[in-house]
Figure (cartoon, rainbow, N blue to C red):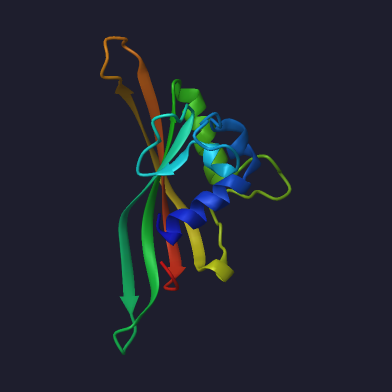
Length: 157
């Protein structure tokens, strides 16, 4: 897992509304935050729903006059997955805005962690889709995807 994924996952795990809504029943992880269904790329086979999948389709580095990279920009797609559309949207709202504390909103929108290289994180928009399972059940998985633009200092990213 790249440091950018780790930083964002660690942030999501501090957001009380996210941890209250996302599944945490994966018994492959005896203790700790691994039990939460928040993963880069895809959920584990034993993760339940609702869950969060993170993808980084683009990462671009800017170079200074000496050809060295000091700053980068990434697009992160955060897919909030649930068996009903309202739960998927609720999870997306928790991810982006963490409505658990009205006095100090702490979602990923406007998040920064300069000490760890995240300069800014801005919500760019959302999409939604329904995916039919490959079995004959007719069940649907609803996915609300929040797209974020993340600026970071080079560091370990």
